[in-house]
Image 1 (cartoon, rainbow, N blue to C red):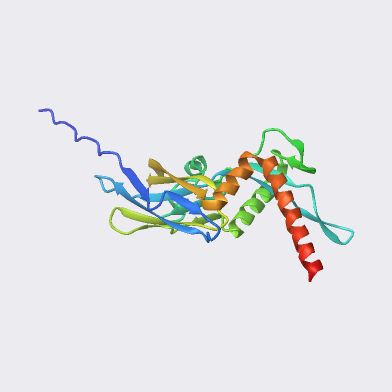
Image 2: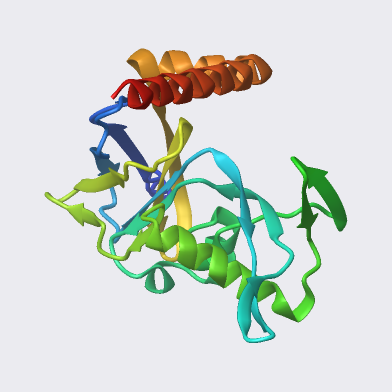
Length: 254
């Protein structure tokens, strides 16, 4: 008699949603807190871990190393890293090193240690607005020091964060995570990636979008400055000159 083998267990899956998908920034914006709720679907009820990664729009990062010259601390030539997210958060059910090995975490960019901070393939010097910036991709043995400085500065500004207990199961298969956006959060489109791990491997991934945009008068000025930078600059100079003249006239009369 031939006995059919039992069917393999259905693959596990994860699903999640944000309580808000759009954050409007006005002059009184002091930051925002967004809650992410999700669920793990696994008929086999295997042990699972969840990692949530939130990335903001990429922004160049310009840093300089200070050196002592003739008793004075002066900034050296700045280094510009391109391709780093303006905002980054990694939250998980437990420390990432206990969830997966180096390879999966590095491929997924999970955690500050595995965050990709790209630089151009070639080294060159650019001059913009009268300032010489060196764009470097080959920093040699100093690369890790520069990279640590980038992460440290972003972390101190509240723009980079990692929380090994930031994802919490509130029920058997339901989990919750909180995304805290500081007032300095960059404008643009954010991506929230939810990764389900089992036995050290990512088995299901879901992506959700979040948009941070200016609203009201701030949005009008932002779009005007971005779409017509020269006109915006000229108007700003005229307004500044007009305000200075008006203040000077008022003080002369008094």
